[in-house]
Length: 418
Image 1 (cartoon, one colour):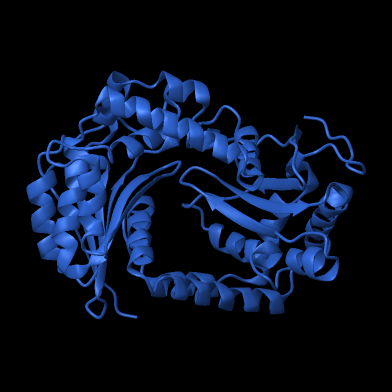
Image 2: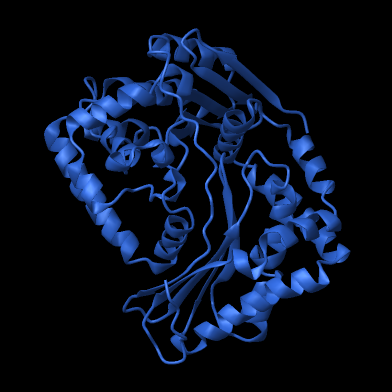
């Protein structure tokens, strides 16, 4: 697979990264800022997410409605997201409209008004978003797991913040935070699609070339995982279970064997937990695993939603599967199948320009280069059964396991202490 990827750095540190894909009609562009919830001081928890909202509320040239209509008018899409390590403002358009999308995103980044009335309005919206998350137990239980596993570490904080910290945000605090972190050395403009890198580079240089160059360092210590068990009472029909064990960071070679272990345990409908808990026993509709990986740490999480009467049984079955992997090891046939599955799913996901843009941006941020797809395929192919068993022995022992149980007290659910 031939990839046409180009990267240049402006004098102020802004990186311009482009994958030229001449056979598609679209282009996706993202302005990535290397700041997320993990870089916020505790008193400003939720500031990155609030900034993401407020940049849609109007600039010197465009009203909030103008921002919404600019790409709608050409059939494009405009959105943004905040994560623990990044904030990204992105747009997808037909390639002929890419200059319009770049101009819009840069205008939002440079010229947002931060009117007090808009900030008050968006704070109300975010408080409603917090309430919505609290009403979505399958999402909430993952947040609770990370908060407690990484207690006291910035990676453990919720991206959205808390009611208290969101209410305390004001114009001066947000502008100061933005001036400290939205700097040239932290900005990456990534584009994938039917575009020319030199055209994107010229426009970005013109629009972002004067962005202040230097920000504050954003290094974090690795998080220490503290095993725990916590029960949270909620008036829900199901009990929502989330088990977590320490994983690996994006920078550790073990991330590839962990990806195999994750997929083998609960990453697909053929996985061990899906087959045992859903297909064989009918104890859950949703059962699966997810390997979360950041620059400074990671977690392997198992989630299941089940009835109160079967919650203990599901927890026991997950633990039994962990123990079976530890006692018997995984088999070569399983590892071979999962390697093929990982390669196929990765390549299928990269058919869209949005996924291609995200891939090159994250690779550049984490590794300082875009890792070629062929290299990733080779690294997956190099994962052996011994590698997977070694990772399993390191992370799956019972003394590493944390558990969050969220739901009604329910008969048959053993009392678990925090």
